[in-house]
Picture 1 (tube, rainbow, N blue to C red):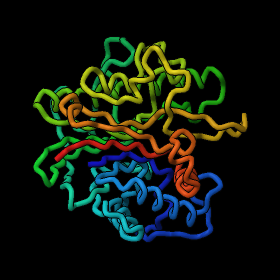
Picture 2: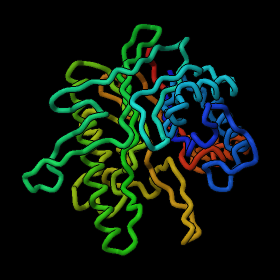
Picture 3: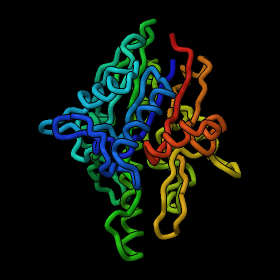
Picture 4: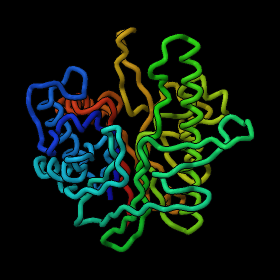
Length: 331
């Protein structure tokens, strides 16, 4: 079985208010790429990775007239994907939903949100003291994680959790003091979301369930200087000792000279590209004996992708993130 996570940059821009696909020469959400080119590129990438299940981060919008699942299933039909059915969870107001595209001939998937005193439902409120002032702060997800009960046709049950944690970027801050304050506040909130998510993982592991957490966590060990204030990245908190992802774990000390990356962003000020490891597929210990193999489909770091000009260009035109796949012998 192949499971993937893919942050598709502003996928929502390719659909009109009635979820009709717009493939034309107008700008997409990818800088310098029109909607026709991005749409064709996304289709090509999804065809090539050919996953049984794809956690789509920044999926099309759900709103007054729009439905994430309808848009994704229409796209899958247009692209001829075997992962042709979609499921989503709690909608949000960011036009960046989280949804799963999957092959119904291989597995069944349904939204199955859980709640407990230690970890309330992800569309609710989590109370935690973020700044050690002996007062509980209230934390919410701008994009509630998608909790899925998945059953393979062979009868294996999996718990999939798709996540898109809050960015630490100090959006709107202008002065140096404002940037620092916003970055620290955003990191506090992101760490709280990571704790919330990890508590749900703890509950599933304690119940002897197979767990897969995947998506864009907007963080990684050693990614910025503010991590030193809190001791751990949110990625390390989500994983704890219960989940495994070789790319995340490779960034723990000692760090490699050239760490892996799953994204590439253009900095207009420096006129250079910045690379970062933000996207993960984490699995519980119960799945480690099933010969898991991870791959980042990076156009410049994966030799096969680089050598194939068509997939290399499609990866660059489709998104500023690249897919991560997990091949695992799940029956």
